[in-house]
Amino acid sequence: MFLGTFEHTLDDKGRITLPAKFRAELAQGVVITRGLDRCLFLFPQDEWAPLAERISALPLTSPDARILRRLIFSEASDVIPDRQGRILIPAYLRDYAHLNSQVIITGLNTYIEVWNAEVWYKVKAQAEKDIEKAQQWEELGI
Image (tube, rainbow, N blue to C red; front, side):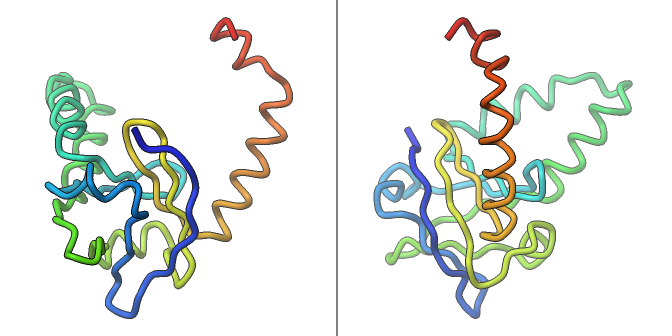
């Protein structure tokens, strides 16, 4: 389970250090791909496989399914963290997410998101305003 928010730096080679509490679960490898809202998604191998199967099962005749496949698979990269828990973020993904020196790594239970720190704080502030409406909580029966 991935929980929490961590501020890290992107080094000159385009690597981030994974939070220590996430490293054991990601030691066998991680798939990093384009996320939504200009962030990156990181999936441990055991979470990536069922997601990849579900996306692959979408009908080829659906234009939206083809777009999703192209964006998720063509921009995915599988990496194994080094001994210091660092992973290389490919340049095209760094560009997509506007990653610079300060990044936010946030655990979302079964996967991780990586954000440009400035963008993350804006998205978080908006989410905090929106959640006060509490409609999502009611829809979930909470």
